[in-house]
Image 1: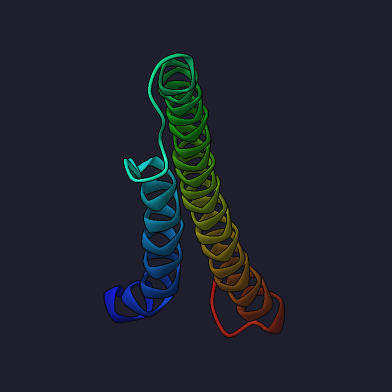
Image 2: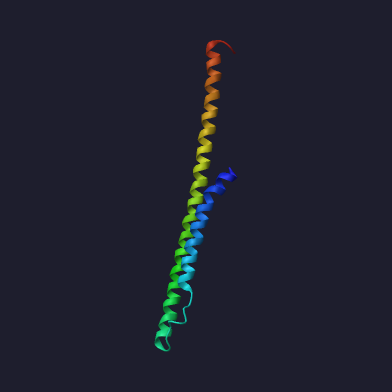
Amino acid sequence: MSEDWRRRSLPSLLLFFSVSLQFLSALSDDSSNSKKGNQAESHATSSSKTGAKILIVLLAIVAVGLFSFFLFKLWQKKKREEQYARLLKLFEEDDELEVELGLRD
């Protein structure tokens, strides 16, 4: 089970890191293109706005990931309970069948 989990998590982890690297490259400061004065200040404010947007997007991705994980665990628990109920029902039917056939009192 843990091996299956690792196989599923590796592609999602690689995707997360590639997206993170894209955001980090956007945040990198390219000082060769920046000019003095007002343009430098506008670049700094736009960079901080971009950084805030990236942070919000990353937090949203993490929240969606955690929510998906929670729903997956809930779904697993529900399926496990359904299988257990089926198993109990199967054995209950066998007992009734044996009583009806007179094999057991």
